[in-house]
Amino acid sequence: MSLIWSLLSLGDAAFYNAKLQQAQRHFQQALALGVEQGDLFASAWARANLGRVAHALGDNKEAQTYYTASPASFRQLGNRHDIAMVYLDLGRLARTQGHVAQAHRYYAESLIVFGAVMDKRGIPECLEGIAGLAGAIGQHPEDTQRAARLFGAAQAWRAEARLPLPPVHRAAYKRDLAAARAQLDEVTWATTWAEGRALLPKQVIAEAELALVATEGDRG
Image 1 (cartoon, one colour):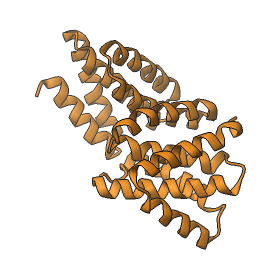
Image 2 (image 1 turned 135 degrees about the vertical axis):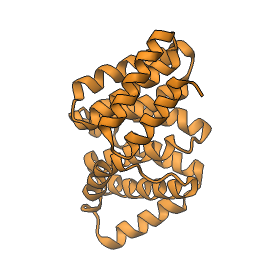
Image 3 (image 1 turned 90 degrees about the horizontal axis):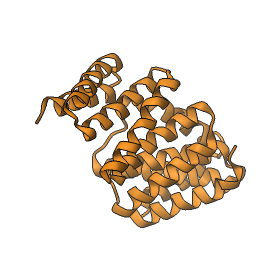
Image 4 (image 1 turned 120 degrees about the horizontal axis):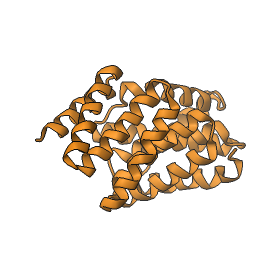
C-alpha cells in the first residue's frame, strides 16, 4: 500500500471514531502527496474526506468546497460509485444547511447507484438519510411510518453486514430517529420498525423509492 493510501486509511479510522483533528492531519498530508504525485483518485478521496471533517467540525463552507471538487475528478475517472458516496455526504451537508430539496436530490441519486449493486455500506447510510427526510418533512402519518420502516431496515442491513453506525454520525442519527419516533405511538412505531427489519433487499430499495416520491411535494 502506498503512503497516500496508508494516510487515507489512518484518516478514515480516526474520522469514524470522531478523532477529527487527527483525521484532518492525515487527509491533508494525503492530499498534498496526491497532488504532488498526480494521483487524481487519491486526491479526490482526500478532498472528500477533508469535506467530511470540515462538516463534522461545523465549517459548512469549507465542507462544500471540498465536496464539490471531488465528483468532477470521479467523473473524469468514470467512477459512479464514489460519486454516489460523495453525494451521501452532500446530502448530509444540505440537511445541516436546511436545503431539503438538495438533500432529497443527492439521496435519490445515491440510491440509484447503490441499489443497482446492493452496496453493503452505501445502502444503510442512504436509508438513514432518506428516513431522516421522511420523518422531518413528511406531512402524513404514512411518511413517518415509512421512516420507521427505513430505520428498521437500515439497522438490519448494518447488522447483517457487520457495519455499526460510526460514532461521528451518531448524534445526527439520534436526532432524526427521535424526531420520527415522536410522531408515532409506541405500538405503531414498533410494528413498522419490525416490518422494515423483515424487508428483503429489493423491498428495501422499493420502500426507499416510495419515501422519496411521497416527500417530493413536501420539499422546502
